[in-house]
Length: 158
Image 1 (cartoon, rainbow, N blue to C red):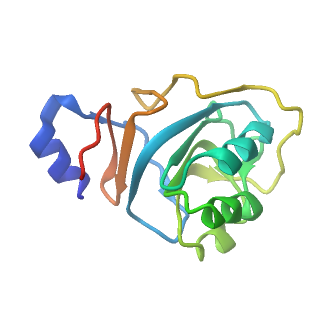
Image 2: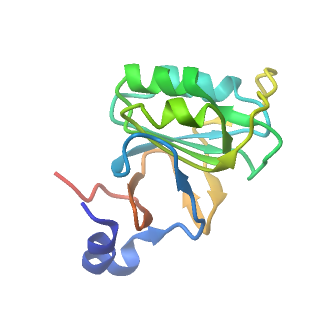
């Protein structure tokens, strides 16, 4: 499903993310039910979310736009692939971008950083997060393609 077509068909009932993410994953288009992680420079809860989110989900990580460290690398992306998640959206940075680019998963991020994150377990899971002029609610649906990111409270597919 093209995001442009979803916007045309559903109008104001869908929300368009205002951030310009870069796609680092092997899949340019993906969609799924949202599960959220709210962290800053710490990826312990990101790993937990990737290990427990249902297959087909999209894990949305609000890393506060930080470029101090990566919240996802090739090991976490591989967990997501192995668990058949649809994708990962990181409001922050990733690393191991070359390896992630060869994986069959969608991975959006603001950029890359070679530094690993803290491992303190600070943050929250499955809470509403805000970035890109979007309120990202657990259980809502996200659709991604080369044109952008669209969020809907209801599924827009069968």
